[in-house]
Length: 217
Image (cartoon, rainbow, N blue to C red; front, side):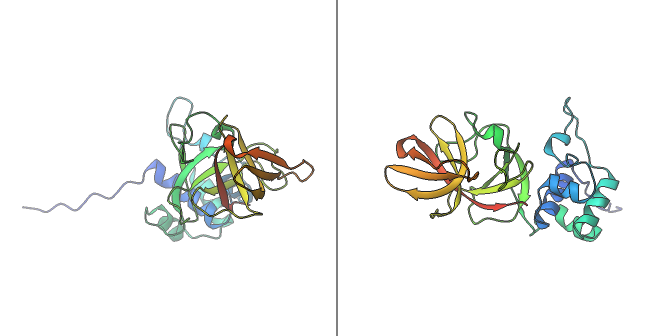
């Protein structure tokens, strides 16, 4: 009997896009930041471009991949290693747009991702297995975060005065700010826009608070 060779493993749509996410993370960039550095339209690698309106998978072009590799100073062999699910450059974490993070059902009571709408992105590893990422939209958080930046949030990381945090209230409001003081009765936070006054949130109004441990720039 003639023994047949194993069929070559086909690359999947998700593998290619996660490899591009890992490439961006290794360069300290968001996917849109990598596209801009590569001289491409900033939306080239956005998650909204990965599936068409009618649900068909959209693949990145070989030209856009080549430009991204040049911008990140990565060889094709290096990119192939990023495609490997066990690549050490980053791990996949849940991702959601910040504008959608305030919707009901996006998180469970512990502040962990829940429900539909989440995708994945490869980011530098965090010790917290519940870590998740949020993509900034708009200019409300300038100059700290720009449109398209990605922040990595760790619900289990210890929080200290001066840390940047994400606070979710029991009315589903999401706030990104710097922690000034935390007591049993309230949180005092400073908006990232220093021109805005500090804010006090009563402890009973806080659903959860989590520290920002990494951000693409």
